[in-house]
Image (cartoon, rainbow, N blue to C red):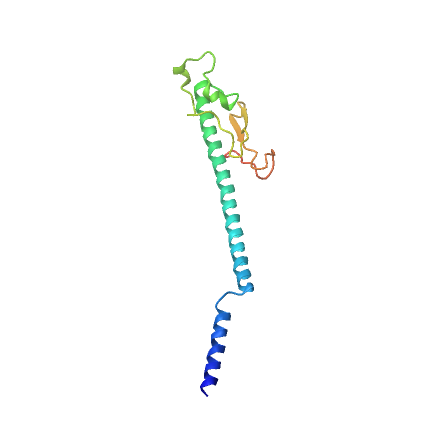
Length: 148
């Protein structure tokens, strides 16, 4: 009887040794879950970045619009280009001009391309837009003039 107990004990020990590791199926399942979680978080981060770039472009457009309005109040017309916000118009003194109207040079949009600028002194407005991430004008991802 003593030998029989010993045999059972050894058999249960063998099972314990066989069960101590993970099976290949369990490891593959865990790896699949990790891949899904990583892809979901990457997708969320890319969407957040895209949204942030759109908002940055909208803020810059609004800043340019305000600077153009200030320029117009001093000079009597909108600047011919956005870079004119830094240049003293001919025939004016620095005191008359009151510029420069931006602290730094005109940056490119968040996607590295210049902004589109179209002054209209007849309608007393300016159109400032970014072509957006695709770089194509008049598509759905364009950033229109903020506030109008």
